[in-house]
Length: 450
Image (cartoon, rainbow, N blue to C red; front, side, top):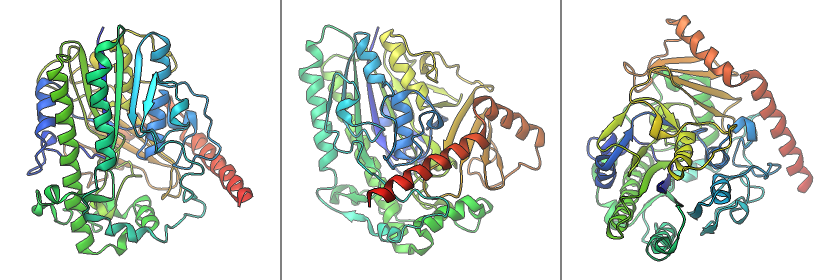
């Protein structure tokens, strides 16, 4: 039986870290964690948007199952049990520090204790979720000025981190039961404000994306929808360079906080019976294909980092088999030897084979910025994006990791195979219409409240 520490950042594209191969961004503490444990090379989120992804993770269920489609909190069901509550009911002490942003307020999620959850379920949340007709954020281009030096940039995250470290030092040693600590920080989520020290680290990071609006994948209707919704075609080169540079500094900040956590675990002698897992809620396009932030099922948006170390994980191992956030959540139960509800999805990372080609990973998107729903299936090196109102895409990721070439028409049997896997999970047509119907109800409720 092991304790668990889950460290979750916000909007971290794993490609922006040295442990996942970035050419000059240094993340020594992610490398340190990987040396101590196992790196999962192909990890995905349940949905590339904050609240849907976090709500799915919190509840152990698919986004379409809990109908947490967007960042709007109006009309959401709040009665889904959480992993914190389920573990607590089985004798595991569950502590949560930082961001929640799920279907219910933090203090009602059932953890043994929860702190600094100021970004909890806020009503009504984001009201720009309308897709019929597609909503346009009239102030979206102003977001592109959100970069540079601000000495208070990390104050909120530092408060959360300090509280979690004090809990490890003062509370964890007093517990006579297994425990699970979750730490949720806000960075490297935009805006990309840095302290002067971190801003100065990567002047070479003020570059332009290698693949812009001119490539095939950037011309997909859903990609154009997102550029329209966020007005990203209005971004200047100076803004693009500034945002990309600031993002690197924010990733370095997260790496520094991970280092503080690893030092604390070592100093308190906890490493022998404590697993540490680092991940994020979704990725960040960072200007690739002219797209920004998340909301897309392209790799930069839907991929997440996943590194796990401790008594349950082999040192220096790299796993190619695709995994997702539900597998991470399942790992907490496996470590504590607790029973997980049978209808929850996911398998423990601890039991997933190193190079499985038949395992299927699923993600979906029904939030703001695209005309209709989309679903992703990853199996082996193949990836299908099934669009409800657009041409489908099939990518062979081993040969085309940047998703530049849609080979859907060239490999119809592979496309059919992955679509069959999708339909074993859900009907894309039914779930797409359920999402639209639910969002129409949200619109009506918002209009009544005006």
